[in-house]
Amino acid sequence: MNKLPPRHYEKRQFEEHLQKVVNFTESNISKIGINNPKIGDENLQYTYCGASDWVSSFWTGQLWLCYQLSGKESFKNSAGFRKEYFNELLKMPDCHDHDLGFQYSLSCVAGYKLTGDSEYKQMAIQAADSLYMRFRRIGKYIVAWNETHILGPEKTQGKVIIDSLQNTALLFWASEQNHSPVLRNAALAHAHTMAENIVRDDYSTYHTYNFDPVTQKPLRGETFQGYADESCWARGQAWAIHGFAQTYIYSGDEKFLELAKNLARYAMQHLHQDAVPIWDYLLPEDQVQYKDSSAGAVTAAGFMLIAGLCEGEEAVFYEQWAMHLVKGLMEQCDLTDNPDAKGLLNHGASFVAKGMSDNLLPYGDYYYMEALMRICGHQRYFW
Ligand code: GLY
Image 1 (tube, helix red, strand yellow):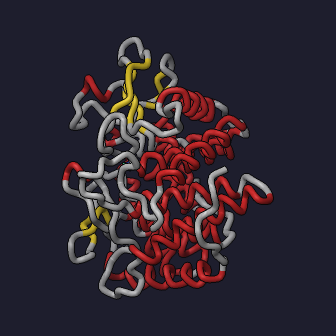
Image 2 (image 1 turned 90 degrees about the vertical axis):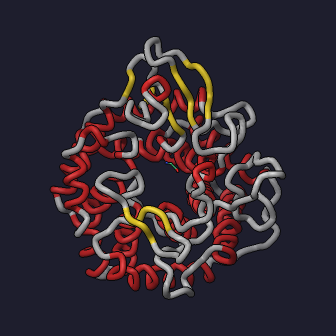
């Protein structure tokens, strides 16, 4: 086991902070209106998503979490205003990719779980069916992107990416709703393929992995948003930690829990004292050392997922590490004392090579809230 983080943390300060996050989110409802935050600008204001965007559901998910915690109609109504957006997206199959999981778990699965509205359920099942169409039976993986992606058809038609383990939650959920193993089997097969190919022997991860689009044989790992093909993109590692822990919850297969723990230890070994990850764990020192608060938030939520699956000292170990990361975010990135800010966390790195390196990010905000809630003992989520 790695050493414990340098300080010991009590839950109380996180409970107080979670309440502050809910209040701050409420104060932004009227300012954000019916828009879906995409990425922040230099004034800590959000720019907004177009008709389809992989990040379109994170603010909705944050509103649903706030509704669950507070019971306030303002959160429910604001989340509900987004139903039309996700209904329209269902009518645009050319825009569907593996991110249907993020998009519909946090909007429609959440809405169904919290309100019982069957329209949400139907929408989420339709999205899951569309996601299942991306399953490649011979390669046993879910293809991430479309041939129209900037990388072009040769690169994308056999590509999996590390974030996909969040998206498969929609398949597991829909399988339970349908009382059919088909979608679940695809999600499980994909998770095994990911474990065998996208995770390296030292438990770092590739961002993406290519299969031959015709024979579907494994080819090689490759980055898209990380520093280099053989580096370890911090948010990718975070998606893997959270995603494999979640896959264990859905499958009961111990292999995935062990994997999540080993991936978590890799992250612990590469985090610096201040506990906010640098955007790539293997970034050379001569590069600008941008932080990625979103990687910290997803990692912390993942550590708490693992803590909930362990007992005794081991559970405390992962919980203390999660608190350490969240404390780092609270001290260095949190904006809840700034009434003009539209998001919760500053210093997110969306895509450094494209200059999106120090911004508000809606997924950073969502997972920050999820991590705080997990630390405070809340058990209900939409994955
Ligand atoms: N899904 C891409 C990312 O994490 O930026």
